[in-house]
Length: 187
Image (cartoon, rainbow, N blue to C red):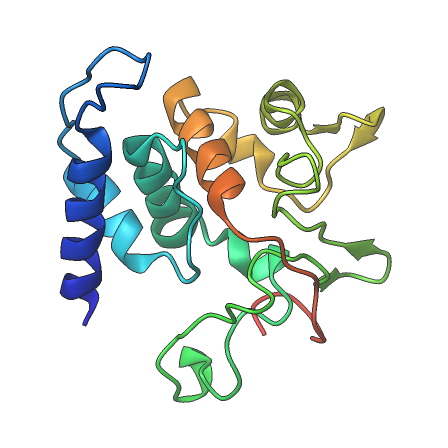
């Protein structure tokens, strides 16, 4: 089933990249996706909004978010669909309804924010500049003296600009979600 979704997605991308005579944009030939981007598009647990999206960036972002970083463990509440936690015998299917909607309690006072787009389309309400600032400095853009205590920004700050941009584009392509109910990260 997953390969059929990827074939349909690849075909749709090919069709959408063909020049339209009434389109004022110059023709750009279809771009091949690297292996990580293809995997990323295949494993995205939610339907993505790919209109006007850079498919390579979104695919790479999905790969980094879903296969390399584990963002959903803290920024999803619950992380897994009901009965699907791999730590309890499930298949690891993520909760699409609350995917990256935030809400996981981290310690007695911290609650992970949502990372899905707000009404303006900004992931977690952050512009690209604010997102880069938060990851690179570990500080809250709205309150720059506040250090993001639980966020592993100390590791992620070493990601390339291309990687962070891909993550941002992927988050922009995800549907908005609200937190559900969970006791903590990874639940």
